[in-house]
Length: 94
Figure: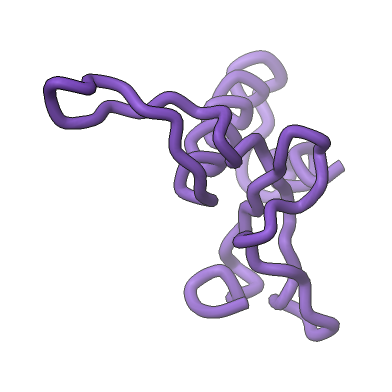
């Protein structure tokens, strides 16, 4: 896993496929601290994204599709529980 996700201070988000397995293009964990995927979300052919006309929307794949879903869940949990920072991180990784 490369920068910036390999930093221990950055939450690395992986992408899952339809069977909840790690998507083939998603980075895998390394044995060293800071080399792990911390949390994963849907990111393979399940996320509709804006697309240039005339298509308007298209199902695309990527960790960049999984990350906003994880961020949205984090925001909802933060609102519900009041957790912030490392406490919220621990909740998400649990």
